[in-house]
Length: 143
Image 1 (spheres, rainbow, N blue to C red):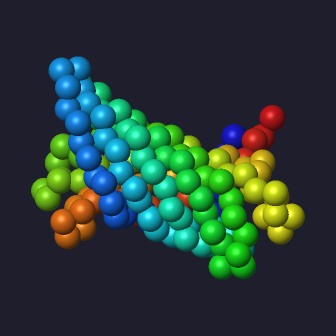
Image 2 (cartoon, rainbow, N blue to C red; image 1 turned 90 degrees about the vertical axis):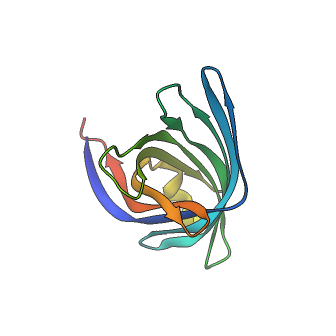
Image 3 (cartoon, rainbow, N blue to C red; image 1 turned 135 degrees about the vertical axis):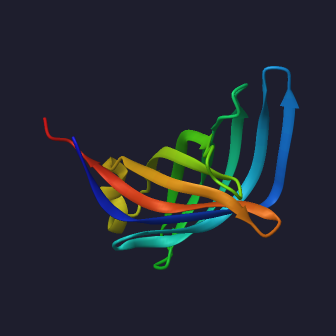
């Protein structure tokens, strides 16, 4: 398999950034909005995140939401990954790697139903909130 760079992703917490710690980690819930740009597929995202915080400080982002393209098409969006603290960073930031799938009935964008994307993102504070930004790659099978 090879990875082909196809675009960029930006997401920012806009509401309910709630962290609930407990003895063996914690849970984070929030609403994020942003944009996805991947060639002809570009639009705005509205997602929720229910991320588990592991005891070692890592998070497992689990996003579900909608991508609305500039042409008015709607695609279901899923993103699951791993978010780790960058131990050398000051101010603090995170390194995020995640897999993304999309689904739509809109014939203009159906080819994205078969795509598996990988996001390589940097998480950092933006004002009083938190966000991620980075590159999108499409997995191209070679078998």
